Image: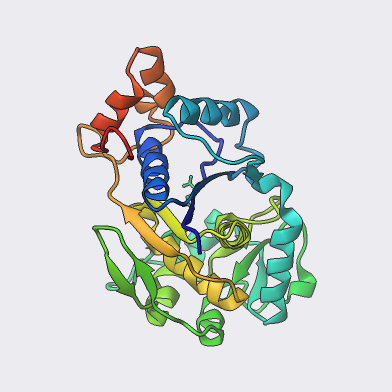
Length: 286
Ligand code: GLU
């Protein structure tokens, strides 16, 4: 199987050094293995995605020296695929509609308890208020959630391979951890037709991704993805989580951190080689 990886930014802001690191590392790994590097635009969040950010992503990546096959996959064009995956999970009895807003969730979660985690990879762990609602009752006001407890019972959980320095090895999925520290994740956001976790597993499978290269901040999310792959009968790629690029104060870079935007470095006359040096990547991928 040919090594195939991807870079999957969301066009909701400028790419910064952390993105450059993910993209260049994925590209270098693909080149070193004689494989393929794909680009995917994760634009299901139409309220926050903007065509000018998408355009800037292309410009930044070309400037960094990357290329990728056309056409580029865009998530906003793929809602029927996500719908089909959701229907599969629904047919297994694993989904439910939820109308709770942030305030409802906070109120239902109650006071923090010693040793009980409150936050997971997607924010506050859902307390399960709507868990008994039927999908037949789902309306435009609802998000769709995965019943995590039923999901881990239904899935044949297998360890996944990870090659990053931080985790390197075979990682079993821990059902208890998924239930208590991740909980009932959102599969479809209100008015969006899908959500990150569902789209990403469907797309990685459809693009025949063999290796996912992403930041260590997504390690928890990866466990959700491996679970969804098991439920949907999709292959699990090898994962490589790289350390995060931090600013001078040791803080993780965010998209709104315009000071580290690639476009800003470009304007200031920094070269792509300088960028590689700044993030500790060799000058040439060979
Ligand atoms: N759109 C996600 C991001 O920009 C993709 C990350 C991934 O799935 O590897 O963080």
